[in-house]
Amino acid sequence: MEKQRILIVDDEEDIRDLLEIYLVNEGYSVIKTADGFEALEALEKEEIHLIVLDIMMPKMDGIQACMKIRKEKSVPIIMLSAKSEDIDKILGLNTGADDYVTKPFNPLEVVARVKSQLRRCSMMSVPKEIKSEEIEISGLVINTATHQVKVDEREIRLTPTEFSILEVLARNRGRVLSTELIYESVWKEPAYESENTVAVHIRNIREKIEINPKEPRYIKVVWGVGYKIEQ
Image (tube, rainbow, N blue to C red; front, side, top):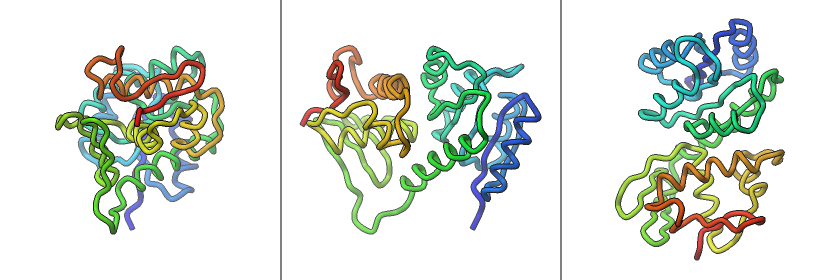
């Protein structure tokens, strides 16, 4: 079986080497690059299953690289940053990143996040013996087998994390889900200060599926409680 290939993008050699040791030990294949330009070149040459992407880098930083990657690919992206303020997390997630780890970090935490993202992607790609299941809600069609989303026949491109959040809400339509419950359902780990993370992903989903995100047709906020999709 071919090893899953992880692209590490960080201008600090020590961090690249440290993450490589831990990821290789877990059975992954690793490619290392030092900036956004090198990362884009690697993506052209190799099939990459997940990207660990630093924000602060010379030449092309992680934000710029993430935006360029998202124009073409939906590969999971975990952002790294030395900044821990919420605004930096929001900035990273708004560009299409799936998750966020703050430096200094425990390498085992990064490995756990990598496994979580890849597990979600593998669940998406496993063919089902039964026919493709579609969830349809007033013109919104979610195919849980092919992971295609359409709104009024228009195909929508979502990241793996965005798709998972939308699927959770759609499967529980009519029910208000708290940010903690959404986070634990999607990330498969306890929610800790997860409100902003979930809110930013939902904002991104709305920008893609709603005609007018300020007056959403599908994902509604219930202030102080959470989010829901109507029956």
